[in-house]
Image 1 (cartoon, helix red, strand yellow):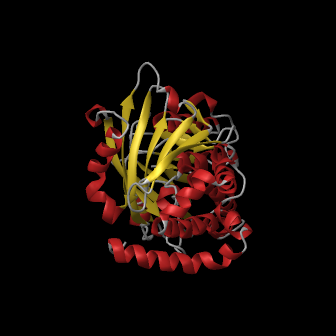
Image 2 (cartoon, rainbow, N blue to C red):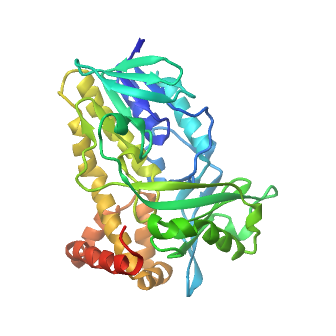
Image 3 (tube, rainbow, N blue to C red):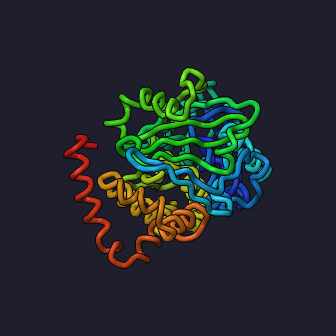
Length: 395
């Protein structure tokens, strides 16, 4: 049995960030992941400029394409290209990004073990946690961080509420060994409202394009493969040429849910910190890894009796944006046409979108700055949700 001060389960952006930051505060940290690294993970692989600014190091080494604009389309709407003339998103692959972030954690003193699936977690009478792996190894720690996804073992064994899988996506890679088409250079393509509760996308990488569709799980789920094939054909490509086709759920936070108790906390997808409007989860994952580190260190040093400071930090720094995003998502999918027109033609709306991606105002600040919308978004979202539920069924 090996002893550490903290164990982090799950080595995605949230887990590696939390492990690195806790170790940098002088604590012994074990980072575990069930997969062998480097490993693929279903994800568009876009790191926004806002997210990149959260790292205390440069991620250029794993960036394959820099996005400065977007090709915006929608059913029954024209195709419009908008340019920001500055970086918005850095495109990478999760197998490269996650391995890179793990290496940075190891440099901070984190012990990393991949291919180390956790089979059981118990909380001892003294408050410490015992983590038993599939190979029989047992590790103990006073602090335990769950970064292992929406239905991860930490939340399951310790009785936390699992976030709802409100949305689902399906994606594949289309290879372009001689380089991606020129018209997509520096841009992503977004087909807004392509599916109820979602959209279609083209994300350029070094030698391929990530092609995907997503939407509300109860509506889009059974239609994802047909929608992905049709979306691929709309660009003149053969869907049979897609490889690594994979689906994944998008867990979303329920307001008021408890994410920490005593010496345990849930971060990233395990906490449901996916942006409801865009489906992007890396930014909030990294932010949650940063937010948990100081409360975890205070708990380990005996300054505080628990890690509730983490919940307070999320409620102050992350959750307001997710709540605003959810409200905007409900309204958008009930009345998509005016939103699509505004995104395509309004300079103010386009600048606000770019700012939210690149580190300017977040969703909550944008909503608050509009004045009337700050007071009407919640009731509008309720009305919009009733309309979409009436049309598509309960979510």
